[in-house]
Image 1: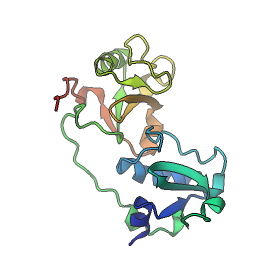
Image 2: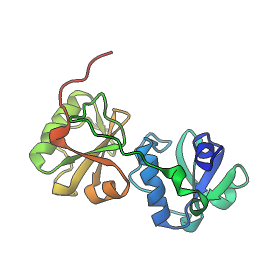
Image 3: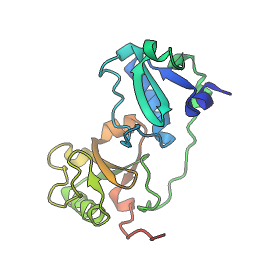
Image 4: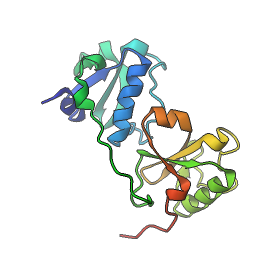
Length: 194
């Protein structure tokens, strides 16, 4: 079993000694659709939060969590990111469908809204589906798209578990490997009920 297979099977943790290593790992994690154990999409590495060069990431709690590598070694094998053969972190280039719908939307996509009007239309649609803003837990509301408050024409939105909306800056989403889709390529037709 490879290191990555062991990581995905919760038998190994990966230590990132630099933030650049963490960002490279997160590109692969985002591509695989992995989210934090809280259900939140990967919008930051938390590398500099507490442990820095001792930061280790693991799926032992179900979703992704971060730990002090020295403490985690008492429970699970920890391998340094630089020691993982890079061919194990291969990201297949997927052909993007012409239009992404709410049914096919996953946490590996970030929807780019270049104008406030585009954000308003997206929020109207998501509000009808009871999608909630991550910070406030309020239903998406066309009067509060967050577009003006933060990144303006560089605003992207990530929807996790088809229920929570996260706002982030375009260049950060690109660094993390999110697939950026223009809001015009996102179908705002109501999803098919199963």
